[in-house]
Length: 166
Image 1 (cartoon, rainbow, N blue to C red):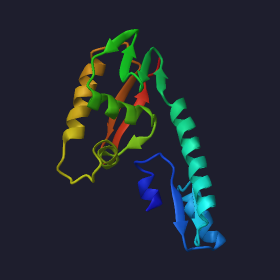
Image 2: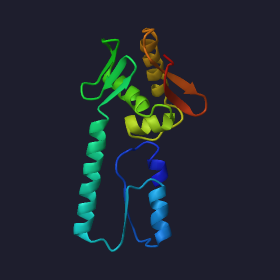
Image 3: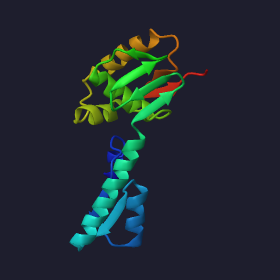
Image 4: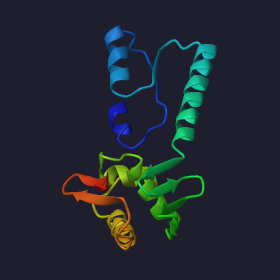
């Protein structure tokens, strides 16, 4: 389950389990858990570990407030996209989608993962809103020949955010 959750969630994961063998702990951490606690749980130790994970996650999120690609900048605080010092007119939903792709530059992101992250539910195989939003984003991006990035479709896999060669 941890490996599946990691496909759409980048926050902290703390496993609390009765499996106390070293091999179980190693496997849990290798599958994406940030920490691993075995039962019985000591409350103060649990709270301390949660605080550490939350602090680490907060500092990681602070460093990911602005993404820059050549002459463009995505700023999550102001929810703006700037290309050549000109702000791109973009909806909040389209910004969220672009941010999800840009923050995973060079990695294919599946439609299912995007729907889970942006809408909070499983892809049912029929929902095409992500495809429509990608199309809308591409039209806006492609209208600017100076835009240093693009969104590619990887058929059967998902979408890929890439920097254009300068």
